[in-house]
Image (cartoon, rainbow, N blue to C red; front, side, top):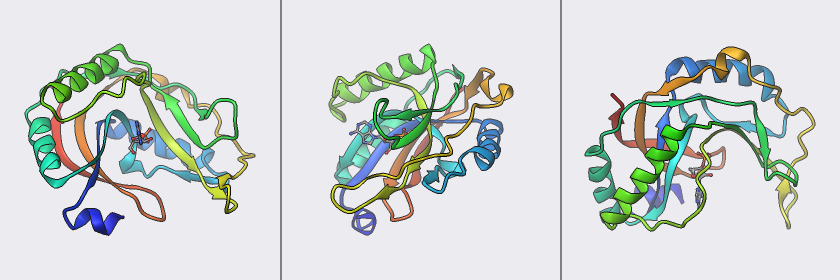
Length: 195
Ligand code: 3AM
């Protein structure tokens, strides 16, 4: 899949808000102590983000138009904050651990971005509710058919207080997601500083 995508075929794209280095570093240090269950695959520090719009698999010409559209965006700094980890799906075995990131400014940015992309013919709104969050770990799969997440016995504990202080997201990035056996790798294709 990843090699096909690199050969100019379809690319899996999404737009995200990047976190300041201080927050990424803090989450990485927290994760080293808390994301230690062997069933967990922590998200790489450079991949910690808040997804704004998932654009799906796109042909090369569409991807080029999306890169251009994102380069021409402007947005003010976005205030957000993080909450203690929760697992998803809610009433079944954990598949993902994420930090809710409630932020009216992020939700406004999401809606504004979706409107722009839809108007430009670059995206179809799937009407899903937007839930701002930072994914911090995915759970390894076990079994063959059906595969299901490994049971996580050592669930991540709460965040330290300094990581729950409000902060400003630093930039908006269009990423290409390359699916690999060890986990997705996110390649930045276009970036806009928020200022
Ligand atoms: O940023 P996170 O890791 O929370 O879950 C996917 C990931 O979110 C999400 O897009 C991000 C980059 O892969 N994603 C994947 N498929 C999706 C879909 N069909 C999706 N989001 C919405 N709809």
